[in-house]
Length: 134
Image 1: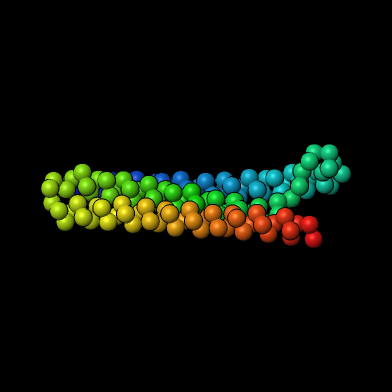
Image 2: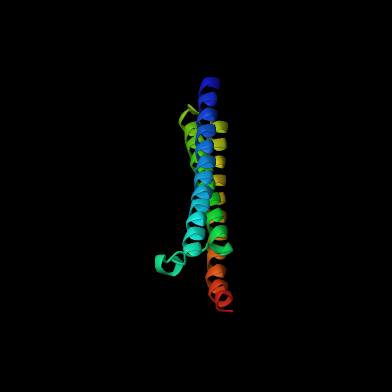
């Protein structure tokens, strides 16, 4: 049992590290695009190339998407852990109840995160066109 938990912990750390490196690639791409934008503007070809600087709203949107991806990984790991506990309960009611609690809490957390994202997207779609026009 301890060996399996150690393997699960290592898997979680590996997936988390992949997420961290993915964030670095996103920011590296942003820096690369910034360099291209600066070059295009310096040569006077920015309009022709259709290149524009990213607004703070777009950068915040990228960050929110990254956080949501990380929360999705956490949700998946909790579901796998809860399912594993349930499968290995072998009729032990306390372990089954613990597994059900973990799965239930993971689903509630996912619903809260998706609701927060939906509210933020709704408010953003209302506010951004009005602030961009001014």
